[in-house]
Structures are given as structure tokens and as C-alpha cells.
Length: 194
Image (cartoon, rainbow, N blue to C red; front, top):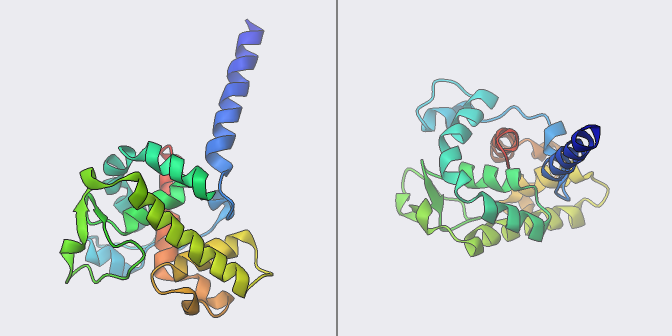
């Protein structure tokens, strides 16, 4: 009986280590983030902001994103990006169950709601495209700031995701709203299986 418990324990340990620590750009579970700005909260009808708002928005998107968890995991392995971060970006760019078509391009959601497609249309190539944009931005930040840590590269890549690497000029630019919100959502998704 103790051999069975030992095997079950080892399987649980192997599974949790894979899901909790993959990604070449830092461990999101150790990152602090203030979460969504109050403007993001208000845009989505919330009367609060911060991590609570990011988690609520992630909770709303979770049923849609769970359908694509296998795709997100596959793409995460391919690009060495934590699937929770990919889910965080998809959630941030979503519009209540819709996934953006023009990933990596800043969109004024109030003006251009046609830039989103129902989640039934999302494909692995679309998730790959979004992740490729993110990793390209991270690599641009790495070239610009070679002494930074993997966590700083991730934050810089997220801040540069829509605006380009020129948006990040110093360590002080690593606390942009997009990054703070995505990281808070990613931590929520990590706790829910991503």
C-alpha cells in the first residue's frame, strides 16, 4: 500500500512541477502585480479595480478559455511561455467570450468591436501568432536590456506587446496597465489549471 502512495505522490509532484514552473520568462507565481487599473474595471462594468478586477474578468473568460487549454498548452511548450500568461493575454484582449483577430495590434475596443471573433473560431495558429508577437517583444527587450532578469523581460515584453519595444525605455516602464492586468489574470488562470 505504501508503494502505491509513493507512486501517487511522485505523479502529483511531477504534474504540479510541470504546470507551475514552465516558461522561460520567470515564474509568474512569484510576481507581484497591482492588477487592472480602475479604467479597465470601469470599461468592463466593475466598480472596483486592482487584482480583484483582473481576477473577476479572468473568471468571466475562464469557461471560454478552458475549451482552448490544450491549444494554449501546446503553444506554450512550443514558445516556452507559461500557458497561464498566454491565457492572460487572450483574456485581456477578449471581449466577453470573443478572441481578438488582430493580435498584438492596439485596438480601441469602444470603436472597433468587429476586430473580435467568436471563440469558436480561434485556432492554434492564432494563439501561436499572438504568442510569437509576445516572444518577439520579449527578445527585443532582452537585446535592449541584456542585464535584466527573466521576470523583467516578461514584464517588458508584456508592456511592449501592443506598442513595440520602444515603449520600454527603463525599468520604470515595467508597470504598465497591460502587464499588471495580464499578470494578475495569469495568476488566476494558473490557480485554475493553466
